[in-house]
Image (tube, rainbow, N blue to C red; front, side, top):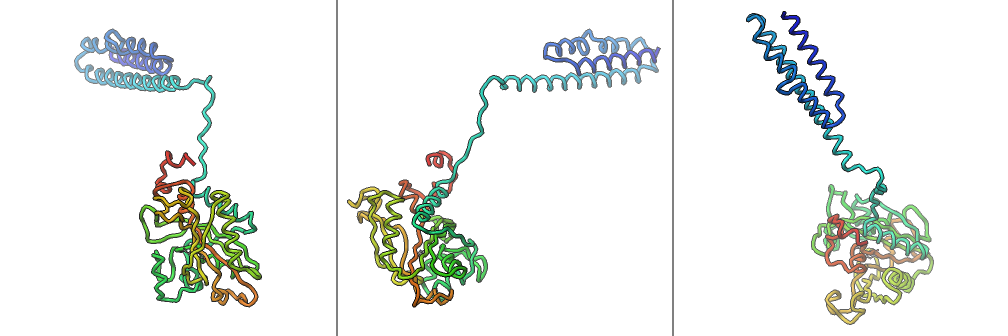
Length: 338
Ligand code: DAH
């Protein structure tokens, strides 16, 4: 009697599990549910006949029925999950639609600007070189004629890594590294990241510069002005005028700040140029012969000029950006405009 009962339970369970494994749609699943778990199902039927068994056989028979019920219920759940996932997939997969090409990114405005600046100087005969962002005090200051403890170091708001290692505050150290490695003539630009303890709407602690260095025979300030006039015309617009203002940098003598005619008012005077008609663009000057001592050049044979251009600033002026932070927030609504 008992073995007959257990055999029935087994048979029903196997039949049910197979049925749930094979159902191919939700309708078939519902049919199988009614058949194997419904009120008139075989399992329910078997539960009902428990009472006809001898008393001592009922507990283990009951356990067998319950176990079978649990397994069949689980099989139902699995089948339901499987069919629903498949339905969801087929709801959005329309194989007749044309494919969606993956979104292609593009270069950040700063990278574009840096590349454009280098392209312009390349056309003027300059090569592109690079140097490290973590620098030694020697290259960032000493060999550029910043004496130790000199107040001109304070202007640079330096971020130190250790006593003699720092994040370069300008790209000028690449001047020294280049001259150490090559003999004149030198015509190079050095683009890259620079760092200072500075943070407001026109300053970011990480910013970008392009350094320029020319050392050759008979170079004068007229060459400096000629090259930078050609650059301003190519980068901003053909009529862009520049002017040189006396300034000071430890590594150039004489030194000049280079301004361009205001891109907004063409020199009339406006909010952008604070009424002056001019915008500060870069620092420059004739290479101080003191530098040649550090790199073994003969100051009687060569002369040169150098300049340092702020890329972020140049981009802000060219594209009329009001806040340098737009360049660093990664907001696609801003970045996609360029
Ligand atoms: N290194 C200077 C700075 O970041 C800019 C500069 C001025 C670079 C004059 C030069 C130069 O090469 O000749 O403030």
